Length: 152
Image (cartoon, rainbow, N blue to C red; front, side, top):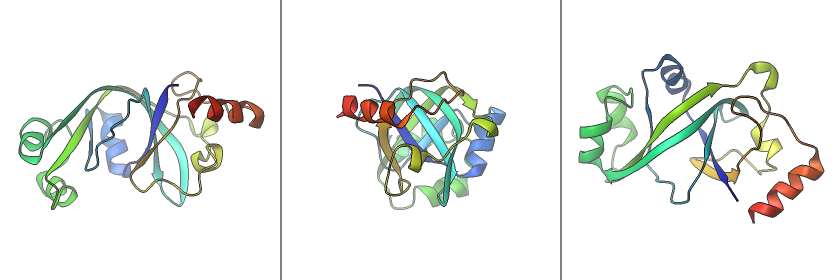
């Protein structure tokens, strides 16, 4: 079963991705399972789907290598980079192959949709949606149950 990576990004990162200034999503904790889509929300108190991305390559490296190759395409300023990765020895860079902003009229609560107890603190894996990129269609509850059963 295909999986999606559900994660929270700060609004400034979402803005940089939309403006084309950020080509990589940087993570302190590396995803170890394969995923086919990235579902992004901004506000942890209201985890509404705001953007979907198709991932490219995922690069795992120590901090020196990450900074050398990915700090600039991450769109992060040096102070922001240092604050985010403070005390970490390794991390990952997830390439954004394609991204689409989800129209507000089609946005929905991801925690409720995926029946999660709470928004993920870092990220979590969920069944990959079957809708077209940026065009979410909320399935009936029975279809959602089948989706989760297939992912197990």
